[in-house]
Length: 616
Image (cartoon, rainbow, N blue to C red; front, top):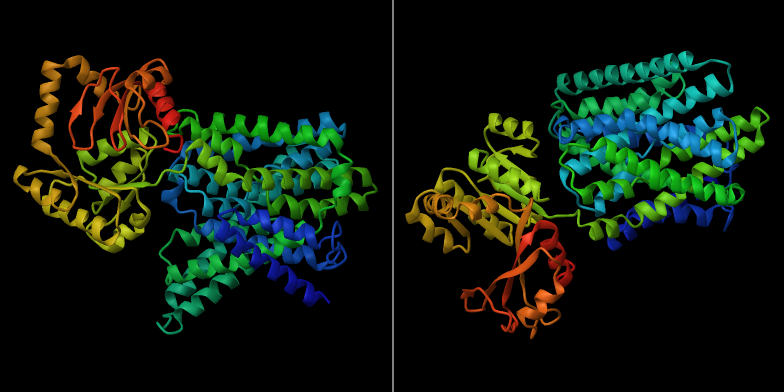
């Protein structure tokens, strides 16, 4: 019977993943509903007794694999996307979440401080089990993804260790704050040390064993899998609940060294994590007891509101101050913080422990609160993540700049400030390092190499811009972008005026550097106020252009349009289908295919664009 149940769970897990990919909805939403369907609330095929004492071991190894894979993808260069924000979120932010959630539980559920701290520790976690599926269907700028992924892995480790320490020191024991801090530091140190040691052994085995090309990929995958299990099991032998930290650390170390058959290992880990995630999420969702949730009543809803609408936004806004996050990105991070496997698995374990201590009401409170938060955040935040991202407009397609010189760097910074998802490509490691120090996403590589552009994401890019001082290089980059990757918008710096025709014959927007410099100097000398304002475009002022379509502006007069746009914005130019441009009067009537240029304050221009083209 157990084999049949496991087969059913895996089938539901795989089916959920396939359905999620088709509908572009995070798979955790389908996984949790599948688990509830086969659990005691509906079909009753899976209960607490189904797996017996083996569930905690299966969940533990599964979580170790998932966190190892999450750590393996956390490259140093990714963490450097927003180091200050990430550091704040996993330190001060984690502390605020822990203590704030504990206070909400104590106040609304009238329980002890110790139980409140236990529940609060569990709710620190927002791991890769839920963040990964969200990022598979939602495209965000790299620094936003880096914060979500980094926080997910690190805070899962923090939550798993902290909840054990709180239980053993404050609930089962009689220790104080000093004992709690010391025990936490000891367990964290044990996990990280064992993870580092095991990763070193795995690296030595893979680099010194002279794996043959035929069997090397298979052996590399098996050795890495053995390393995950050894790291987790070895740490658990030394200290309870340190295995997760060991697995995450081992993955992080191995992901940041030159590992043989790296790509094969990545593919293996991705496939393996999908399988174990499907199994463990469905299995744990099947154990949700809605009776525990119903007993919370309105107090449970108050806790959900406090955690999702008060604590999460507060942590995000405190952590992203002075960083390059837009207001919409802060709102997105505030609205998407689903909880996953760590709270579910550990809550199940400690509910049993509280029962054993003769505290059944607190066990019910713990399980009910944690599963309510998981259910609410998975359904509302993970399930609606793509819709939230689209509404907040935080999913820009990538803009690739090839050339990390002064022109490329300056343009990249301006585009980043305008909210574009910019990646700069340059073969010079010093140029790449300079770009990263200035807070830009950069890739070391030759932009004339199709493989490098593919790695940069050219196949899904909105724009490719060549900014090198070599016209031959720029022309080849533009040819690749146009013919190989079919990029919609391609532009290039042209250093020699006689080369402009070669670029324009490809349909490339060519910017003659000498002419552009002359125009800029003329504006500075003859129109200094306009020149100063143009330098502020995208900040205090903006200029945006939209096309007239049958659904919004056709047959309207300019006077009609001016009456519908906000103060601080005007219709500055009107471009006809034949390419002629004029400053319109109020009597001009718009035709299909005309282009209207709005000019004014940044916020007003943005509202005008959304008024007539809400999806732009």
